[in-house]
Amino acid sequence: NKSLEKINFSVNSNIITIGFVGEITHHKGLHILFESLKFVHEKIELIIIGNGDAIYIKMLKKLATTLNHEIKFLGYRSDAKELYKYFDILVLPSVANESFGIVLLEAMKFNLPVICSDFGGMKEVVVNNETGFIYKSFDFNELSSKLNTLIKNKSLRIEFGNNGQKRLINYFSSQIMLKKYLNLIEND
Image (tube, rainbow, N blue to C red; front, side):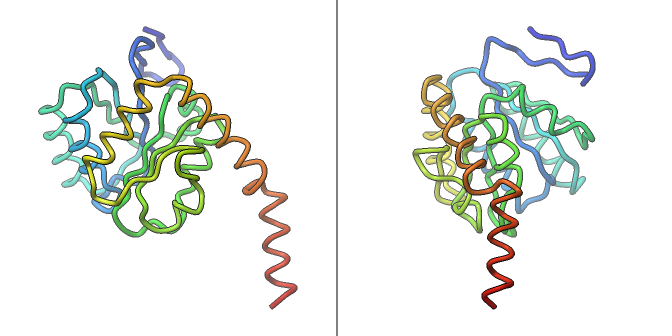
């Protein structure tokens, strides 16, 4: 059990740590992730970073007590970007209002495999079966299947993580994005 004094929580190094970073509201789909965890039989821990809708968070905390996994709600963290290195997988299960999913790129910076729904612009960031998995929005069965695959396959996690970091550098670095933006302006 590696203790993280500076960030004031601990991660169990013997089990897979799944991370979620973002606003905790219904449209981010954490309830779908929780439902999928009922079908994940390997012991995992879920770290949730963010704040949001108090009623939704209360409902999620109650739902968490029914799951056979350790779920930690860390609230808002100014050091959230430092915590990605403690995750094995990042999940973004959004069901609405997700135009891009910047946290996916943040995860890729740390060589993390990602799993996201097919909602909004996230499928423009993640390459299915290459940098992570994309599943059909609201489909907790498919999400649990993708989670189980990555949980059980360390080499696939590493491969997806490495591919994600390469994709970040090749398509989403600030230099690349600036060039694309300037091209849009010049060709308008």
